[in-house]
Length: 87
Image 1 (cartoon, rainbow, N blue to C red):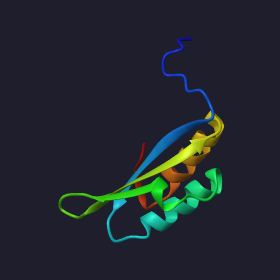
Image 2 (cartoon, rainbow, N blue to C red):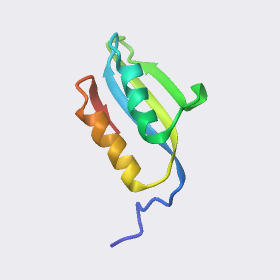
Image 3 (cartoon, rainbow, N blue to C red):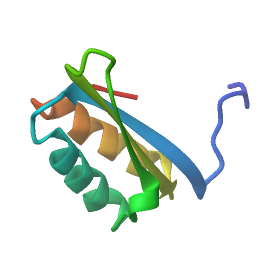
Image 4 (cartoon, one colour):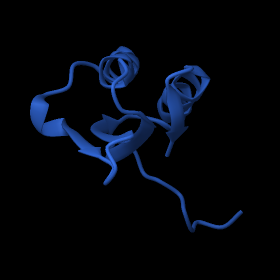
């Protein structure tokens, strides 16, 4: 297996979440990420609405401890009905 793409932990890692504007997306996504990564500070979260204002992009920057932790976060985010995409 190639070493390319291998992540060394712990590491600072951005988790991007997209969904519809005007929903509880920001609150729900933050709760999910914090459940797995601990409490986040305001500086670790950014929000960006789409140009037309229909969608919201969130970025949560966490200190990732393991691949398993990231997998759990992505699984839970992707399973939530308000989340259109998690990257």
